[in-house]
Length: 145
Image 1 (cartoon, rainbow, N blue to C red):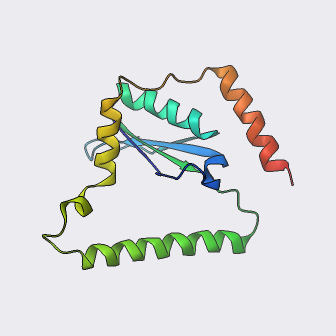
Image 2 (cartoon, one colour):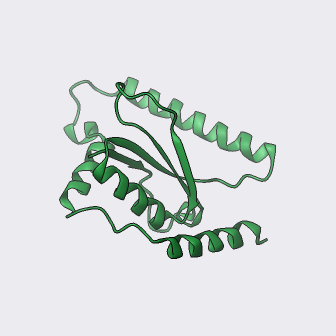
């Protein structure tokens, strides 16, 4: 069994409506191969495909939104936001009490893995027809407006 990593978003997040991509890569350091990026998909399709693959194979799947930036400034803004979030996380870790509250030390990935293990198995992977319908909806979304 592999590992699936994705964002934990509130149900009303506008990011849920974005196209999503899956990056498949080696799970451990022993394997070395170039990651494979697939998509764009609608989020439920991306998650189901990733779950189907990591259920049977030792690989890492990262499911993340594809941000359709339309300007250099918008891309710079996304990069700055990501950098700021990484700095904030580093500061939070540096300031954490070594023997602090156990609830604060639970790794989100461990929680996600535990939740996934409670399920009976991966979601059924969408078939080609469902994926193509999703592609059409994504294309309409990206070209509207």
